[in-house]
Length: 276
Ligand code: AMP
Ligand code: MN
Ligand code: MN
Ligand code: MN
Image 1 (cartoon, rainbow, N blue to C red):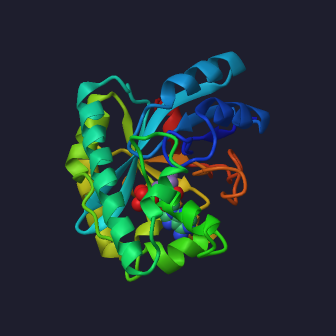
Image 2: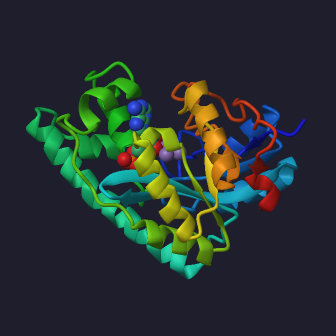
C-alpha cells in the first residue's frame, strides 16, 4: 500500500536523527514516498537522497520555510526543490542568519528571567552549526530541569507572553514562494490550523498564497484534530488546491506520531505527490 509522508525533520534542523536514519526508519515503517523538509535548510538532502536510493524508497527533496505574514509566523513547505538553486540557497541563508541573531536575543531574555547560559546550552544540541531553533533551547531547558518535556518548555517559556519569547521577522511570503518556484518546487501551506486564523484571515491568506503561486495545503498532519483535518479537506476542495500529508516527525520520544503514521487522504482530493 502507498504511504506518503511529505513533512519531517532531521538534525540538519531540529530533528533528532541523521538524514539517512530518517530514511531507513521511514522504510522500516512502510513509507513508500518520503520528503525531508528541514527548517530553512537543505543540507540534509544529499545524504537522504543517497540513503533513499539504496533503500529503494521514493525520495522528494523538500524544505520548510519560515515566513512572517501580517505579524504571524507561517510555515511553507517546498516540495521537489532543487537545493542547488542560487535564489533559494541565498534566501535560506538569510533566514538562518536571522535565526542565529534571534537565538542571542532568546538567551538574553531567558537570562533576564533567571536562566543563564542557555545559548551555550542550546548549542550542545545543535548538530548543524548554521541552524538553531527554539527546539534546541527547549531540549536544554528540559535537561536543566526547568521543565519536564519539550512541550511544556514551549507553553511556559518560548511562546508569546512568556519570558523566553522574542518576536522575530522571518522571510516575506512572496520571497519564500519565489525561492521555491525558482528551485522548481511546489509550495504547500504547512499545518494551516496552527495559525489561529479567523475564516476571513485564512481566506485572505490563501488568496495571497495562490497569487504568489502557492498550490498546496497540508490537510493530514498530527498538528490537526480530526475536525480540523475535515475542515481543511473541504477547503482544499473549495480552493481546488493540491492536498498534502505529513507526520512532521522530529524524533523518537519527542514526536507523538511516527513517520507515515497519519490518516490517508480522503477521496476527491488532488494528492500533491501526483504532481511531483
Ligand atoms: P522555531 O522555528 O525555531 O521558532 O521553532 C519552531 C519549532 O519548535 C517547530 O518547528 C516545532 O518543532 C517546535 N515547536 C513549536 N511549538 C511547539 C510546541 N508547542 N511543542 C513542541 N514543539 C514545538
Ligand atoms: Mn521543528
Ligand atoms: Mn512547522
Ligand atoms: Mn515541520
